[in-house]
Image (cartoon, rainbow, N blue to C red; front, side, top):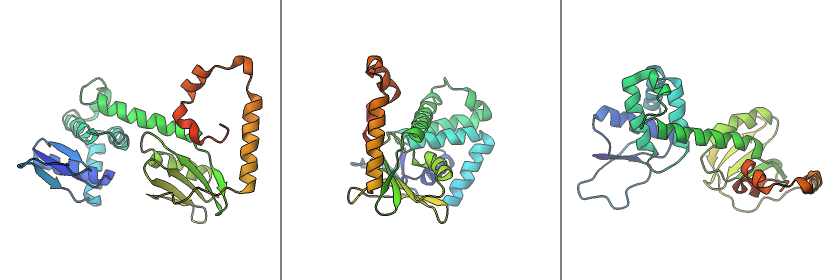
Length: 246
């Protein structure tokens, strides 16, 4: 069985899925990471990303199965879990047979894993809408850092572009070295590779606001009603690192 090697993008994955489907053979793997120690007779096929072909294949998924299936596949891809690509291939293989009924087969062994991944990504993206904290830096823009479990930047970019369209800002995923950079003049955003060379230098006004938020958070709490277990269930510890008030 062939192992399909793609570039790690969703267009690349769609190209690889289309190639595997056209071959008619069950793929032995679909991955963005080259095999560390391929077998002597292992067939590794490098798939060059073809955006036009990917767009056509995406259209086929939406038309022959459903737009919901395409969105589910995309969100499962953003989960970035090992073996997720093969789960997606298996999901689509069933979808070609059953068409639009795929969306109602949530208990099926080929649907449930993909659906669960998509739900996890969607939930985390929704949390990030409330957990992102922008801070004013001396370079003339607002900066927010996050470290989500999944690659949620593509899902939250439009929300913040709509809400803060008149500001220059960056949302930086430190875990993946990627960021959303928004240009207020053009009212456009771009997802790009983004490495942190130095710690951001905040303005004096920003530092004052941070002190005010921490003071407010401390004073608004009612000591007698403290419930750390409930607090952690609503706001997990892993998200607190970059919350200004904490």
